[in-house]
Image 1: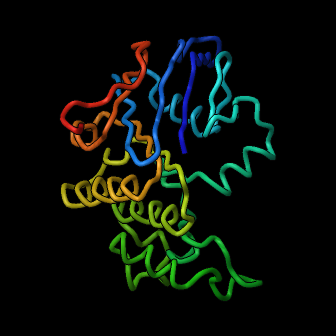
Image 2: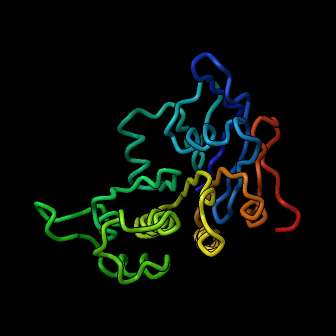
Length: 223
């Protein structure tokens, strides 16, 4: 899905955070939102994902204006099209790996429901095969990142919103997570990543410097 923002501005607590940001995030690509700490990268990501409202400007998805979506329309967007990999992982630690992926269980939670084949594929692609019965609390930080991405793969989300995914990962998990994002985009999805990690930026097809006032640019080394 094509995600575009035109001149969006946001103030939080009376303080300007975003000022006339314009960018375009194309399907089949990864776009990096870059800038120094406090520049508004995460705020911009949350606006594009409809987690935060904008004060001025508009956001469109596949040409449809979504800026003024009400609560029900936002929930449908999150349910049908979007997935998030945020710094707090967005997981339920007390629940199993499988439940955190499918988000469906039988009455009283005795059995995880959902498409078993898709679940197996999501676990296999993220290196979590055989761990579906474990509580999410048993996973390391890198494994939790991969679990959040497994949920997006299972869901067949068309847009993935990612916030500082490698901030606390070791080298092995860092490489695996970047490769998973790259594969996700290569399957035709739109991947938008707020990051300060130069390795992720190098893996992206385009980048947008937050607070620069410039549209996202195509990276020469990925053309």
